[in-house]
Length: 319
Ligand code: CP
Ligand code: NVA
Image 1: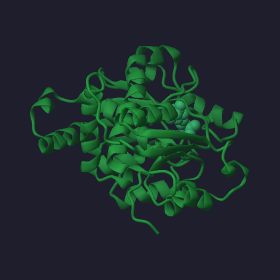
Image 2: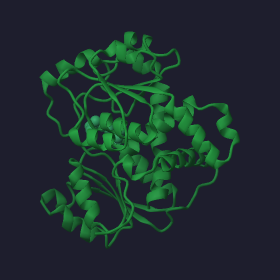
Image 3: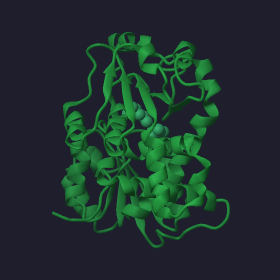
Image 4: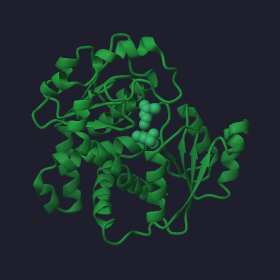
């Protein structure tokens, strides 16, 4: 057993640590244009990816380099892990070479097993259950757009309160599959306390473990099968692909989800200053209408950029 810090879900941070991370992300974003922090100087950080990635891989690798560390990318296809070497053995060996790892894998139990035997910190770069680095980048993007001007003129502690106040008042609506992004919104809601509605078809539900973890922390969310009433007065609307990596392309599942597309009529029912988020990659005209995506594409690509800044802040805390 080891006692190092991990970031396997947002529950590994306190609410204050989430706010600190958002504040630090803003500083790192600003600093990137001028000087750069060397907070990971000399650290060798592994990236073990068992699934494809564009944003997560590149933003973590670039973030490590920008903080003065050295990334070591490993696709599971190139590791003995891909030929059946146990996760436990892989973790015990790699902890002798590396100072930390970022892992993208399938079941949450796989990353938890790795973290148990790896004697250094582990960050979740997406599992079937959660995508915590993405969700902090998403809420950072929301905060950047929705924050009040006075947020710039207070001390750090007061700023945490202001961030909390800004975020707690929001209504966030997620449309689509009950997947790792839906689960990540549920976990973040339990930590920060905004209003969360999940609009999904009858028969779709949040994973039992995710629900229990949220309930234990006093989290509350509503599942709605009515897309338009769910969208009413929303400050943020968001969705994700209907079929996630590792899932079979079931036509029946896509047909059930199709009515939950975010289209112009959905947006009209939200607040006038609503923003749309998408973690990407997007399937235009499947989970979101192309014209809606185009209208909000500046926000979505800012959200993608924010992965870099937020993950640098997470790595500073964890590594
Ligand atoms: N949003 C996201 O995690 O993208 P990638 O799959 O490209 O890493
Ligand atoms: N739910 C998607 C997210 C991709 C970033 C998946 O797991 O494939």
